[in-house]
Length: 155
Image (cartoon, rainbow, N blue to C red):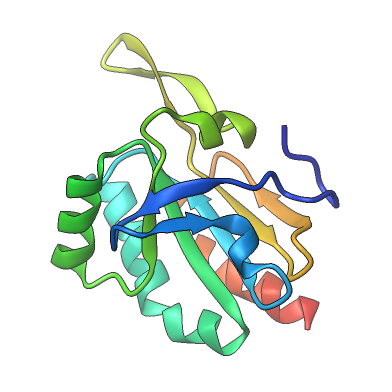
């Protein structure tokens, strides 16, 4: 499981552009904003993705890459990216292996039914590959700005 100030667990997942992406690909070059979200095309997830989209250039200017992760399949990610013009990659974690490593695969309740799903969470990984910040049970409003401010403070 992921621990603060330790190397973030590496992974390789298929991205919304069809390529295989490894977290370690960004080591020694970029900060990584790794955000886990429940489901493509839902209101909260759309708002969060569009907030990251709207601040994408600000993150890029700070040598930060944004990676979104959900259990949705590749075709849903492709449609989500296209519909909202997302300039960053969404990663397919359909076996929730990475969500479990980051301890965001949790029991949830909706309309009286219990099920397993992703708890909205964000992790900042520095250029050396260490986890330097985490937000769990994220509330969407203002979160992207908070993540951006945190990276600015690291510089």
